[in-house]
Image 1: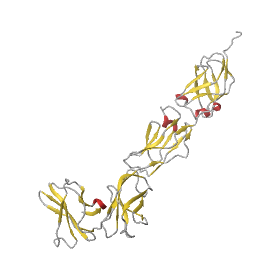
Image 2: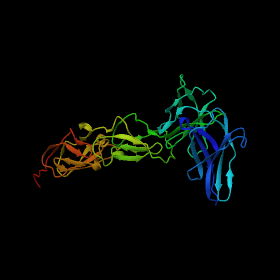
Image 3: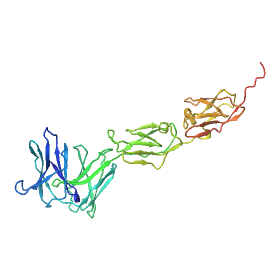
Image 4: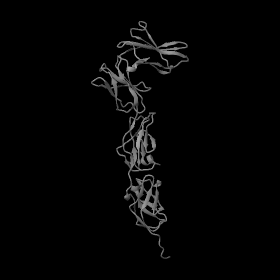
Length: 363
């Protein structure tokens, strides 16, 4: 049997633990409660648990005990078809505390939790303990009580991360734990320093409170796409927005409970008319000429673009140093800019090339 929990106005929660089941069939289980003067010296309260027994913790909430300010003892019993089992007695003082446990909710590392109640009987010997789910590790928290003794504050420490669901108790070494409530710890994607990017930029994301082994999802949201977050997740901008239209994209995250969007969208830096220029002034139809498309290539995906010059389809071959090549179609005579159109931008160069058909004057 574990030390009972004081749930304030809700009563006292008794906890009995079954480590494993034998081949016996459990007929009944519950608690025996008596004043700590000793079992047999005063009347014993027999509290049956109506719920079916299970391996692990079994609970029973009791509205209140008859006497306050005295010590009680409790034993957990199990009756099977073959035997009766009784735990060792656990002693606890019953001190009613008027408080309202926090409702289960999502919190983040560093968040301040406030409990309302009457804490006039709480002195410096009391502390808050956080209990991890399926864990024997407990953490003591620094607590603050308001001057009017009507509220208690403590902070969610960094050991609890994404997916943890700790519950908290208030106690000292002489009292039964007072239940304060349970929370769900969720992570958050950290804001970026900048939200304007070139298409070829690479973004490294970070998350406060993330645990690499958490079973709760954490996803980065860009436009209509979601990407599962891993520690120090990195991605090129073009991969985040691939297949989507436009040049601004809603940007946020989903932490397994809430969807949060940042005030600023992820925005592509637009090309300017001088980002592309021709290295040659004149050209003939159906030829390849030298151009510079380096700056434009940082902002537009040429493979996903429709490229035209003079109303005819063109194609481009780029290199790392800007010595790029543009192949023209069967263009009529005239002076033309080049045009690139894709899901994100419609671009027309300021620079133009004059196209003239080859004139054969003699053989």
